[in-house]
Structures are given as C-alpha cells and as structure tokens.
Length: 73
Image (cartoon, rainbow, N blue to C red; front, side, top):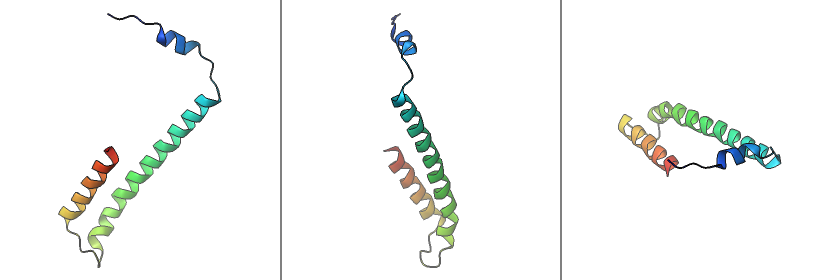
C-alpha cells in the first residue's frame, strides 16, 4: 500500500480567492450544462412537428445521439 501526506498537506492550505473562483466557475458550468440538456430535450418535440423540417423519430434520435457524442468529446 502506498502512503502519502498529500491529503494532509492539502487540508492545511488556506482557502483563497482562487479557490472561490474555481467553485463559482464550476457551479456556473454545472447550471449551464443542465440548462443545455433541458433545452435539447425540449426542442425534440418541436423538431418532429416542424412543418419545414419533417424530421422522423429516428432522425430526432440520431440528432440527440450526435449531440451527446459531441458533448462527451
């Protein structure tokens, strides 16, 4: 087993402005990611009922899959 004192050293560090900025940035990113997923799910019905696009269920599913692959990449 490997023993290290890194966690103890990290616990002794003072909380600074940088740490606050990182937490705020991560929180904003989390909220925006949730908003993006909600919007993507909400427009699926609009894509199917669009009089111009005429997308099928398969095409809407493929678009969602491509979106997910792009988000992961």
